[in-house]
Length: 539
Ligand code: NDP
View 1 (tube, rainbow, N blue to C red):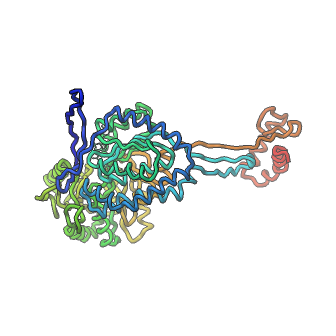
View 2: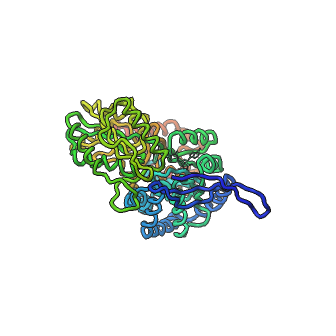
View 3: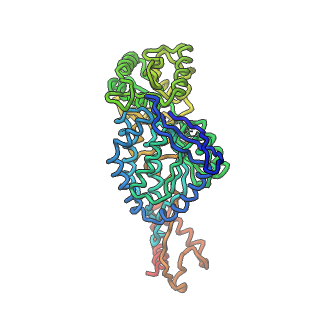
């Protein structure tokens, strides 16, 4: 939870000026963590300019040199993990251990992945199988885009900006990042630890402030790419503006992930996995299971197990021991969720457990399971960002798939079955960027895999090879020898000027030899072609 305030300060000369501040508040207690002076839009422009200058020399350093800084960063992060996780808990209320797993690990793992696979993605040799160019070599080199703008949400305040920043820096970019106001202190930690690890000055600017001021200023600034993670409403606005300005974007937006439980599923495993995926981070996860469907033959058992496991969740301040589910981010989030549940109940949904705010200090809502749910209800139609799960049945798999796909979102999904081949066949039918069989959403922390959605869940991919591609541009370099063969012997390259008298015939023969599917005809052309090629190489 946070507030942005405008304070009036009096300067030495008696002038008044307005200084905006960001107030970081603990949503579990309402206590103020700290107040930070917000960046002004002018300072955002200055940050982009300074970042551009720093980026030139960063790009000029070798990939391994850049990796050395990230390696030190990774070590610092491992050492300072509790400090970071406690800052996250103070700003979000989530359990400290959960911060380690879902915020720290994705970033630590990003560095692991980049050290292992990054260099070969930045420079890859191509096999040129065509015999005509057997004396040539091609490679792909990836070049940074320049200065990247980033605006990120509060729900994974270290994991999301941290991993995006690591990919961007690895590839030789500079970054200007606005963290969500609620989690400004966590955003500043990324900068602090990277600087401590030896990141050159000005390569990363974390600029605190509000979305409509500082966020907007980044969008309007001289950036080369914009990566946005957050709501559809804001994402669509930013996308439109960047398109007008010709700035490429990566958009990681909302989700309404389905879990589809087949009749042969391991119900104990499926319900444990679905409850964790939905209720960790107090249900405030883009890729949480937001709709659960079970085959009619196992529905009653599935629903009862979900209710039983949800009833056992321990709600409280995540900074304390033995807490599974923390608070929502603020009172506004509780109001919105309560409205979605109340409206759905009014339309006929049945509260199987929970269904109300918790009467205690902080922004808490009871972990809730809803039955008797239809697709017209807000808890299914809209993205729910809190601890609520609607459970529904399906008669056969085609109905299950149809219901799973009945959404404007397509971030991730899961299929639960003992027959993993069948699970894969169902996965292929679901419209989502990632479909996991017998687990849900966890691949954010596995950096070999891509992250990003279909439909209104956004476009572009963070993580993996694709995450590197997203923050670079591809250059193809093709090299041939500088040596020439006397023209009296052969033209340097068969297809160059001057065209020989038998040019048409030679090229025709070449096509037959290289691409024809008759072995006999290809063999017949071989001697002439070999002569061409030998002559061409001057052997
Ligand atoms: P918001 O879109 O409200 O906020 C995200 C960021 O955008 C914040 O930093 C916010 O600043 C900033 N912002 C707000 N208005 C503007 C503006 N006009 N111009 C520029 N920046 C602006 O999202 P939430 O914080 O509510 O995050 C939850 C949403 O994010 C959910 O829909 C969730 O599904 C999605 N999400 C998607 C992920 C994915 O990987 N696909 C991952 C995580 C979340 P401010 O601090 O002022 O709010």
